[in-house]
Length: 391
Ligand code: SF4
Ligand code: SF4
Image (cartoon, rainbow, N blue to C red; front, side, top):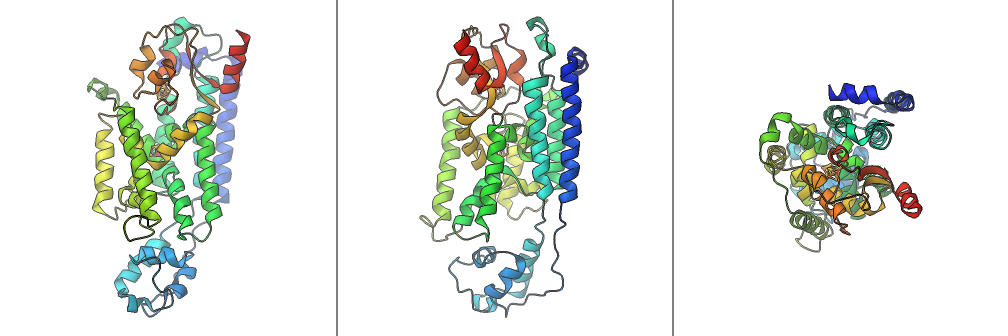
């Protein structure tokens, strides 16, 4: 009902933008699928333990170090010895080969991520608030239906259809993994990371808020209407961000071999919830992480994003450069606390009180229709500057 009311208030200009966005989005997704190359299967080659890493790895399209890590060997192990001499059995080799061959080419997923972020960008900046609708009608602004629809699409298509990869979290991890020789083409990993970070900057953490499948899954659970009666807790940002940052630094120290004796060891590999979308829980710790994150989402907003995710941490740093974002007009704000109360994090609070490093804002739009004096808007930083110099 609220969505219908919102739609009926849209101006002709906004309806044209909505129609164009739907057409462009469909065209991009179709183009992405047409460009999609099916993964290559190397069925004709059989690998045996009397072959060396140097013989096997190139045929699987991975580096020798990457294959060594998959085989649970040191990165510096001899690549010329038959793997049998490294105590690898036939079954172990077959298992790792199957695992590596199961990685599918999911180039089309990048188009889907782009479209999801585009939807969020257009909705937040151009459509959520109908033209010429005054403050008395603010309750009909930014209805949840378009957001929830996008989140469902993200979980089903970017998540369960394309599987575990690609995703924003692994994009940052893979950049560092390529630095220790775990990928043959570091440039591709850097480009993938820059792609995701660009989508985080174009609108404040839009890739997390609107497109990441695991973030969307947590958001959907948190948004179930009947659960609103549960007393939700806001975790102190100083605590969650400290844990997230510490985990990130620890991961780098282990990965580069500064601590532990296993260069190439990746902590996130054991707590990667994106495995959910492949249904491959390689270790019990992954299954436990998924359960804790999803059950925790009944009570806490996006627990995995707040406490663990390395991309969540890095994109929080990049929030400083976001081009469009939630802006609180301090000339109008009376600090009544309406946006602070509705915000599931300390993000709105940080903005109202002008903190230099406020908590992550996932561009969820909850705060955009509650301000009684119209001080909270989603807008471009350039518009903000013009407004200030004008007044
Ligand atoms: S912070 Fe959350 S939404 Fe962002 S990449 Fe990580 S899991 Fe996904
Ligand atoms: S409610 Fe909080 S997280 Fe959501 S858009 Fe507003 S400030 Fe950001």
